[in-house]
Image 1 (cartoon, one colour):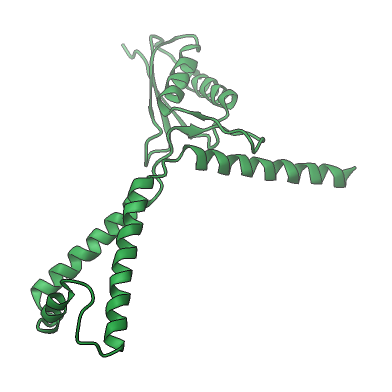
Image 2 (spheres, helix red, strand yellow):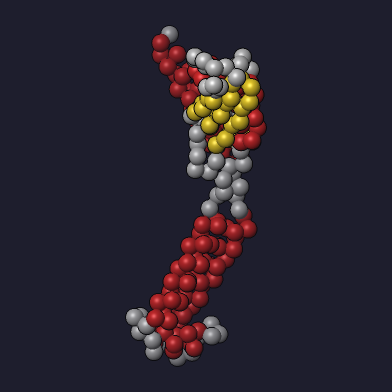
Length: 204
């Protein structure tokens, strides 16, 4: 009995991980054009270098690639400590780094939803998740206005700013936090954000 329960839990966790990988792979921009451009540049540079190295190995005085003779001549007559050589090397390295960064997968288009079926994947927009959190805060008696921020590229925290007309809010902040947390649990995002409730009330 216990062994079957453990096996079921392991299988469920494996399915959940597969579903998460599917959601991330499905909704992350692939940037195929940038990746193709970077691959073509790297392939062309590697091919030119291989051809020139093969010609140098065979002691050929002719450069098979047009324009490489002038480049090799310029490199031979300019030491590495030369400012122009350093600038050209830095520019080449910078262009290569930009190509590689552009070819990396982009930011997820929204927040993936949690699930145990590896054949299904869902996503909810960050703006919709913020609206849902704000609506949940408004369900608490005494809350007049609310606004949700966060869930950006570097900010994983969901900040819910609320305003009440009460002069003594008591545990109103905890009630708003519980309402927002319950709404997030019903939506079931893959990674639940930290909820930070900030309450303003009348002090006159």
